[in-house]
Image 1: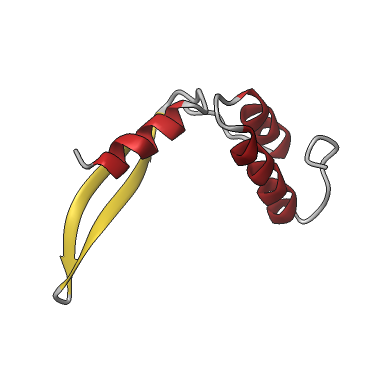
Image 2: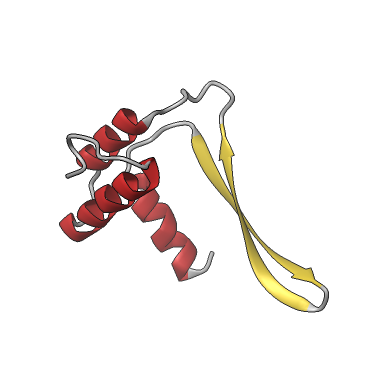
Length: 86
C-alpha cells in the first residue's frame, strides 16, 4: 500500500466515522494511468446534514488548521452560515 494511501486512511480515521471504507486501485483510461479511489458506504450508514457534519468535524482527531479549513468549507458549501461554522 503506497504511503499516501496509508496517510489518507489515517486522516479519515481521525473523523471517527464508522460505516465506510476506501477501495484504491490503479486504472488505465485511454493510455493514461491513474489511481481510482472509491468510497464504499455501508447501506445502514445514516444520512447526515450540516449540523451532523459540523459535529463530526468538531470531534475529529485532526490538526486545528484542518478543522478550521473544514469548517470554512462546510460554511461555503452550505450556501449560508451555520452557528458553529463561523
